[in-house]
Amino acid sequence: MKNHIKLFIPGPVEVSPSTLQAFASPMIGHRSPEFQSLYREVQTGLQKLFQTQGPVFVSTSSAWGVMEAAIRNLVARRVLCCANGAFSDKWYDVALRCGKEAEKLSVPWGKPITPEQIEPYLQTGRFDALTLVHNETSTGLMNPLEEIAQLLKHYPEVSFLVDCVSSFSAVPTPFEQLGADVLLTGSQKALALPPGISLFAVSERALQKARSIPARGFYFDFLEFEANHRKSMTPSTPSISHFFALRHKLAEIFQEGLEARYERHRRNAELVRHWALSRGFELFPARGFESVTLTCIRNTRGIDVGAWIARLRERFGCVIDGGYGKIRGMTFRISHMGDETPQTIQNLLEGLDRALDELGG
Ligand SMILES: *Cc1c(COP(=O)(O)O)cnc(C)c1O
Image 1 (spheres, helix red, strand yellow):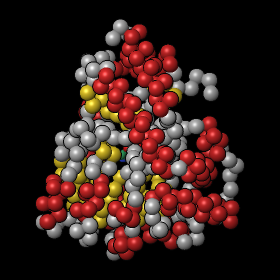
Image 2 (spheres, protein in one colour):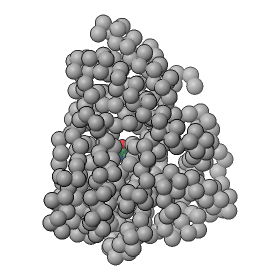
Image 3 (spheres, helix red, strand yellow):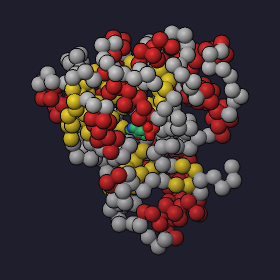
Image 4 (cartoon, protein in one colour):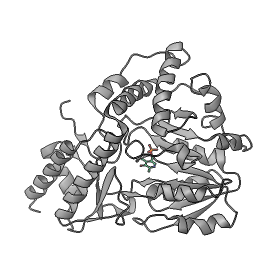
């Protein structure tokens, strides 16, 4: 691919030529037996990845579609939105825009949400749903999902809605073990697929609850997904290209092995963290809560990040991200998820060093 700039931004991430080739498969009808068998094949892999016996639905939308859907399908009374970054802040806004009662549990960006902070809210009995972003892509922070899941087990009336968009498949997120009600991800993060679909598991308890919730709409109605799932189909014409690409990706994932995949992501992360610290930077998230899929680095050296990234692109044909939302410029982010390996990450880091040298940094 001539002139292709390799992406080390936290989504969309680089998509491999073999995935793109699978994506470009000839079309089949979405009500055909060929599609049903493709659906079933993909379903088997997804259940393994989500670690669930229940259905995993595929939505032709970006992750926000399913994040909005989770609110529309499962909030009857009031939702508590755990917020410590741009994505989790926005989930609260989305709840309000859906006309739901919502309250925000705000924690400073870069600090984790803890069960101790959540519990007093749940004890009031005012909430029937909670949103949590596992991996805050804006700040490179991973919230303690397992600990929070343990707490939520004491509140079965509170639907537990979890965004694993940028952690899914890079760390274990076992749906049933966590006791989550919705666990969702997008295609363009660690799965390294083109953007355009989202994958999500919904608990049996949540499907039951959705039946009693009015105005779920059509496109994102969980019960439509469930009814069509029984026929190995989607409610409307899906991105069939994504199903081909997903089948290819799932085969790759199980060929590598899940443990090896998790380990590769850990090693990538360690390399980048070590590089950042050894170059005199600091990590943005609180210690011990650093993301495994991307590293958000504080620009403590006051570098002109825009110029640095432009040089990296020009000379080495790759890009990183110059920071998200209100911490743009103060921070920069390096993605190391998807198909990246310690070798490709090492190459990137060398490029970053050389680009900075050339700028006289
Ligand atoms: C990327 C991302 C989203 C949104 O994904 P879209 O595909 O743009 O809808 C939501 N949450 C997190 C944590 C993300 O990283």
